[in-house]
Image (tube, rainbow, N blue to C red):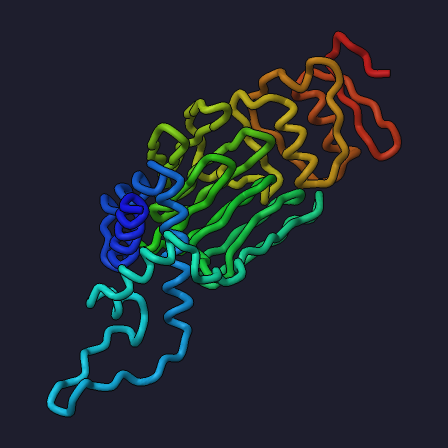
Length: 317
């Protein structure tokens, strides 16, 4: 019980400080959240209860006698006003221990694009997210400063707010905006990140990596492989230019297939072969697939709407 109270008190303290936190304090907050799953759970509970209390209508407080002034208010009857007297800290400690309050329904929702149908989503805070085809993105109406990429590729134009950094989750990876335009692609367990402007902080399970314009990283199986890109090429898929640095051809084919709706199959061991280079696409399969085959040294054939590529040593049948 004492441990529960200690965690919930810490969660309340972090929540109250967020309006004035420095970048260094935000990093400390992130480390605290990730130190124990109970920390993140307690913080989520505190933040949700704060929103519920702020939205509730309470009767006007009455003084015990006419000679005593009414207590001052800060942001009405929100959590911040209550915690000043210690009442909310105690109440939330009880809630954390007993689960007496029922959480409000989640405000999360999913935006999904079919293969070959990109779209742009603008969040309430002004952040713009360009989604490639075949992409699933989880958003939260109650918190426009968080998102989760389930699959696919996006280019983000984040409205920077030092007091409330934007955070994107991709699998076990947290990507925190430090004032940025950046691209994220997720295929299976692999996440690729490239920065066009500003910087981001990657926070996988056991590391902290800060990336600035021109930096790229591939994160998979707990490993981070860093590389360099031309900033102007970041998010180039929006213009039909896709750049890769030692990326498995299976990932290349998946990203092209999502963007344009092409049905690409790689035969034999071609899928695992690494590819480095830029592919210029038109969006027309009859032109793009033979061009891709020439670039990677493969043969191709068409089977209905599907395209089958194989290494030149293995003629597809």
